[in-house]
Image (cartoon, rainbow, N blue to C red; front, side):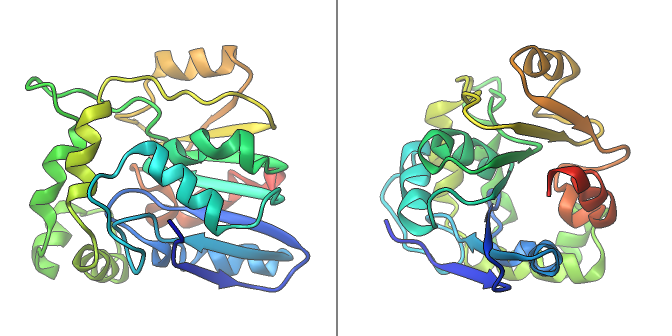
Length: 232
């Protein structure tokens, strides 16, 4: 599936950005220009069922990964995936082969709810929330980020969330073909302290961003960027 992409900059190094569930390429509105200022040509995708990308009957992790591979340049200098985008990058990394991979609070292991579904299955409830309701869901967001979340949610297909119930509880920890950093929220509901140690044992560098909620690049943008300085 060919995806809609958004670009910033015209540098000779490529950076690929992959957003999390509900969001789309607009969520990188500060990260994209910041990387462009560092000399990158930044390519951000809208995953299937998000933003302006096509819809599907079923949204599997393999579909997400193959669609990214079809839509972005191979062998970028940098690839960053947040949450579901981290899971997607992990599945694509051995073919994409960026020089460096950064996984921001990645969904390598989707938690299982008591009914056996994925935690994402509850996310359909945020579809079409008002600005005021969205602000209550995301008290950590600025007014600008809340307004953006509302707009992105309007273009989101909730079936992307329910589809992921089929992979709840599975382990999508990626291989390590390139230097890889896992950036973690504080606390993280996806990357527990025990899992952080497991990742370190596998060769990942793991960094916790103090006080950050799950969407680090939107909650604490300066801390997100400074935590990646030596990886950019």
